[in-house]
Each structure stands twice: as structure tokens, then as C-alpha cells.
Image (cartoon, rainbow, N blue to C red; front, side):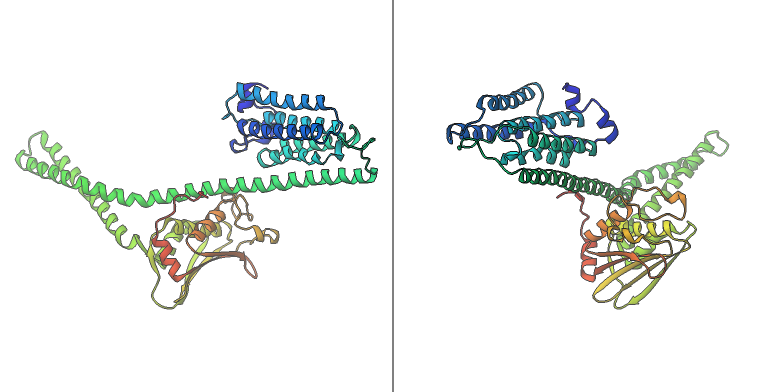
Length: 452
């Protein structure tokens, strides 16, 4: 095992095929510490059986195998830094040893009849939680082979009675089947749970990036106001001097045209700063505090020129229209729902909204193909493409749009429901309690989406 493979710089067949990610690389220090724990447990078990219970078994070969495991630990800890992360090939080698060494001990002490046989599952469980599929398959398969080998070839189980304990062959066969079945089931189950956890973490990281982008765009208004304020005074001085120069320079002088150009350009700069100041003022009023209909218009406007009739309808008005502070999370979440509807609609997308004294709600309806029935329960999961887009230009996404929308809106206090319409198309419904709508959108946006 060379240093490159331990550090993950070497790329063998398992790495190339599986596309191993950095998050799946085990730290060498983790396996070294676990092996020291295993060495201590094995030594205590052997000492207890040999010199406390005084049961006969081959003590010297057993301690030789334990010393081999301890020696490997000393070698790895001395040669490599504990911060090294193992490639899949290196992890395969190390975990294979962690199956062979206890299998050798079990073969000397009763084989599959030894109750410590269950420890053969530990390397497979570690691989399932951290490694790519091919490495998991290899480690699990090797553990099954080792279990079969110690069931067929082994020395007698240590026992105080002469002749040892002989279990019926049928019971031994059932024990083998139980261990193998548990091993395979645990490997598959843990791999699936760990894989879904990694996918969720990656998707939440992508969601955070989207939200940060929205926050940066919202912050541009403040930068524009600061720039207009700082540049206003020196520009006024430049404009005043330029006008004085224009009055003092005769028109027949060659420099007259340059002075005139200077005056025109300073006036142009004043107009630009005026627009920035206007943008800042609007941000502090109707852009900083959005009514519900203004929010809908803002998220709908970018999607009106994609060949789909985008309609807005208010179906309930009880009380004053809800107004809340601008929130990048809500804008991005509702915007993603509208974008998904436009992508998959045939001709019409309808945005319905309403409010009463108890709640505020938005519905996005399209006339597209809807969701396949088998996928309805998983709609909103990360990295899931939901349906065929009406236009190839809109297809091929990562399946993060709905996940981002649902995550952001739920964090704002909304309940999000996505389903098929009775006849054709899909409907996404977002409902806030009225108090939560105003409170959540007035609060600062959470920048640590993936924390916890």
C-alpha cells in the first residue's frame, strides 16, 4: 500500500468506475483507532478464556494474529499522518484485512459457532456508510465468503468438557444463513441511508448557494445608494467647474469642444446617479416592503416570454392585502415553483392567490403532463427529475428546483403541497398562517441553511 493510494491520489478501477467523492474518503486515524479497540477486545477475550476460564484453544496462533493487527496499526500510524484520507482501493485493502484477521481467529476458536462471528459484519457496515457501491459490494461479498469458510473449516470451539460442544448441522446451517442475510441486509440498508443523507447534504448546499445569490442581488440596492451618496458631492463640484470653464472659453478656441463634451458627460453622470438614487428610494419603500400581489408580479415577470400564457388571479380578499418585508428565500421559492410550471406547461400557467384573516396562500397550476403516479410521494426530493419538459431546452436539470423551492418556503413558515390536478397538469400550493407570513418575511434570512 503506497502513500499515493492512502491519500487518494492513486486512481484504480474502483475509483474510476465509482466516481468516489471526497466525503466518502475515510480518515486513516479513524480506522487505526477502531482497530486498537478491536485489538484490546480480542486480547482481553483470549486472556480470559485461556487463563481465567482455562479452556483449551491454540493460544499462540491467536496472539500472533492479534500482534499482526497491532503491528499494522503501528506501521500505519508511524508512516502516515492521521489526517490522510483513504482512496476506495486503500479502504478496500484495509477493510479486507479487518475481515481476514478476525476470520483467522474465529477459524482457530470454533468457526461460525463462536458467538463473536457477528464482528465480521463490522467492516461491511463501515464500508456501507462511507464507500462507493463497488467497494461496498466487494467488502460485503468477502465477508460472506469468510463466513462460509469458517462455517466449513474450523477448529473446535473452546469448551471445558472433553470433546467440546458440537452443534447440530441444521442449526449451524441456520446460523450461517442468519449471519449472511443480516450482513447483506445491513449493508444495503446502511448504504441507502448514507447515500440519501449525502444527497440531501449536497442539495442543501446548493440551496444555500442559490439563497446567497438572491441576497447578493438584494444587497446591490444598498451599494447603489452608497455610491450615489459618495459620488454626488465631487460630481457636483466637477459640473460646476466645467460650466465655469465653458463660459470663460471663447467658442472659436480649439478647447471649446472639449469643454462642451466635459459638461455633457458630467450631466450624464448626474442622470445616472439620479436613477441610482431613485432605485435606492424605491428599495426603501415598495421594494423593501412587498405586498402579496407585488411579490407575485415580481416572480412571474421573468417567465412571461416563453410561449406560455401566464395568468394571475386573486380569488379571495378578506381584510387588507398582506404586506411584508422583502425576503430572498420566499422570492426564490415561489419563483422556482413558477419556473417549473412554465417549463412543463403546454399553454397556460395560472397563479392563484388569496388571503383572509387567518392565512395567506398562493397556488401555481399548469396544464402539463403532471407527475407520474409512482413519483408523487417523492416530489420535492433532491436530484429527482419529475416529468418530461415540453421543450428540450428546459430539460436535463439536476432535479433541485422543487427541492430548493420546498426547502426555502418551509423555512419561511409555509406548508407546501404538490400534487396532480384532477384532469391534467400539476398544482403547487403554498399556505402561510397570516401572522407567520409577516413574521417570517420580516426576519433576516438564515444564511446557514445546512447547519445542523
